[in-house]
Structure formats: structure tokens, C-alpha cells
Image (cartoon, rainbow over all chains, first blue to last red; front, top):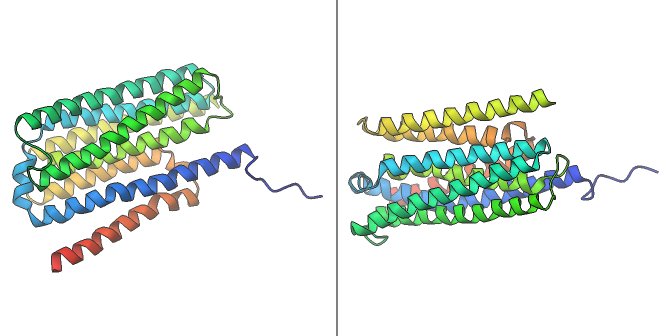
Amino acid sequence: MNAPPAGHGDPRVAFEAAKLGLWTFLATEVLLFGALFTAYTVFRVKYPAMFQSEHLKLNRVLGTLNTLVLITSSLAVVLGVDAIRKGKARLLERYFGATVFLGAVFLCVKYIEWTEEFRHGLYPGTNIFFSLYFMMTGLHGIHVILGMGVLAYVVVLSRRGRFSAGYHTPVEVAGLYWHFVDLVWIYLLPLLYLIG
Amino acid sequence: MSRETNGARRTYLAVYFALVLLTAVTVLVSYVNLGLMNVVVALLIASVKASLVALFFMHLKSEDRLVWGFALAPIAFLALIMFGTLVDTLLR
């Protein structure tokens, strides 16, 4: 008798399948944000002077600060994944906890920015640049909130002793999602804050 | 095994400092008026940062061809969408 082919029951195959599934989801996310990036490109080519003057109204310092916050949160995620690969669940919980906290810091800074912009009469309907700005940072912010929820749930599962060096698929795929959120912001910073 | 994973930690920290450095560079360059080159430099740096995150933090470096395909295909589609849209809006 031949050995049965490795299927879903094989944990290694299941892990690879879960990872590929998450990458597939990220592909749809690229196209979701891609529609907005395309709209941005079209209007930037059409109204270069307006983008130039409007982007100077954004707070470049807070935008940069938030970039550093997100990059640091990504480092915490990858160190958390590294921790559970060695079977250190407590360390994973601490790193992912730090990421959730940094996500909250990011949202607070974003809140301060939006409040400031509203006070200066800059709304989503002000002009096409601010429509894109609020739409892109808003959609990204929703992703940050969802990511925080996912990472917090991973921490809860880890506290219940679900993960080990041998099995931690949810940790890995949650990490991939958070890095994607970081990736989107890496492009939003220059496009919105630096070059308008 | 433990030496190997400590090596991984060192790599993550090196990538992190590279990302911080590149962020500082791109922000500083934005205060200098280079004309159209500002856009080129900003997007180039962003793409280097994005590649670092994908390769090391998302472990794309150690993934097989199938995952690479799934990671790169949406970028190709996005380029196609942008190209098609721009051809339409610029030549209308």
C-alpha cells in the first residue's frame, strides 16, 4: 500500500495553505487600495498645482511620527512571531500587546491630525486632494483597527495556551496582515505628506 | 538552532534601523526642492522600504515560487489598471 498523499490533515500542508490564503487576501487588498492609488495618480497628473499647494496643509511632523510608530509596531510583530517559533508564548503576548498599543498610538495621532484639519475647515468635500486624503487615511485607519482586533485575539488565544513552536499558524498570518497595513502606510506618507 | 534564530533577530533589527533611516532620508529630501525628482526619489525610497518589509518581515525571502507569484501578481494587475486608466484619462 502506498502512503496516503499529504492532505489537509498534515499540519505542514495546512500551514502552507493558510499562508497562501492570507497572501491571496492581501492580493485583493492591494487592488482595493490600488483603486484609490489610481484615482490619486489620475488627479495628481490633472491638477499638479492644487496637489502641491494642498499637501503643504498636512502636518508632516505627525505624519512622520506615525510612520515611525507603524514601523516599530511591525518590528514588534516580527519579534513576536520569532518568539513563538521558539515556543516562547509569554514573549509573543508581550510583543503583540506592544503592537496593539502602538496601533492605538497611531490612531490617536491620526485623530489629532483630523481634528486639526477639521478646525481649519479642511473636510473630505473641500477639494479632490482632501477627498483622497480622508478616504485613503480613513480606509487605512479601518485596517489598523481591524488589525488591532486580530492581534488582540491572537494574544487571547495565546493566553489560553493554543500556540507552541510546533503550531502557531494564526500568529504568522495575523503578522502578515499587520505588515501589509504597514506597507500601505509606507506609500501613503510620501504620496500625501511629502510630494502631494 | 538558537544561533540561527538569534541571527534572525539581528536581521530584523538591522531591517528596522534601515527603515527608520530611509524614513528620515525621505522626509528630509521632501524639504529640498528637486522639482520632478522629488516624486522619483520619494517613490524609490518607499519601494525600497516596502521591499524590505515584504522580504524580511513578511518572510517572502524564504517563501517558494507559488507565494512569490501570489505576492507579485496583484502588483502587475495594479500596474495594468493604472496604465489603462491613465491612457484613457490623458488621451481623452
